[in-house]
Image (tube, rainbow, N blue to C red; front, side):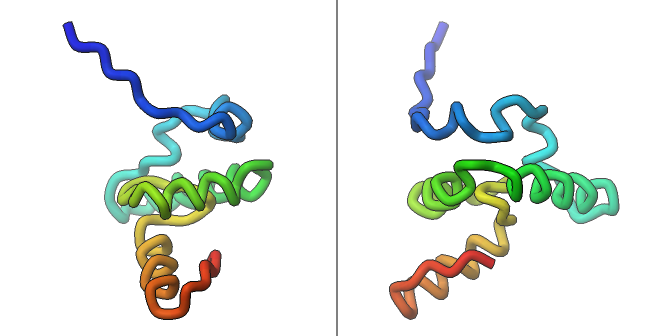
Amino acid sequence: MLNFDLEQEDWMLEGECANTDSDIFFPVGSSMKAMKKVNAAKLICAECPVINECLDYAIRTNQDSGIWGGTTEDERKSIRRHYRKTGLVVNH
């Protein structure tokens, strides 16, 4: 039996998502149902006290799926591109 110990940042325990079904933050596809999950996740993130830490973590660790820090995968890609060009992180 394998035991994986995933790195967890202290701020993760304070996130609004810690008490929410994680499926909402990892919608699959681009169907209307998936888009509703994206919008619902973003609403939760908007009320989160650690949204900036979450986005920073997602950018630093190249999270390429799910909603992190109130952003989608595509939004984070755009943030990374902008950062590479300017050195500034701009949240969409």
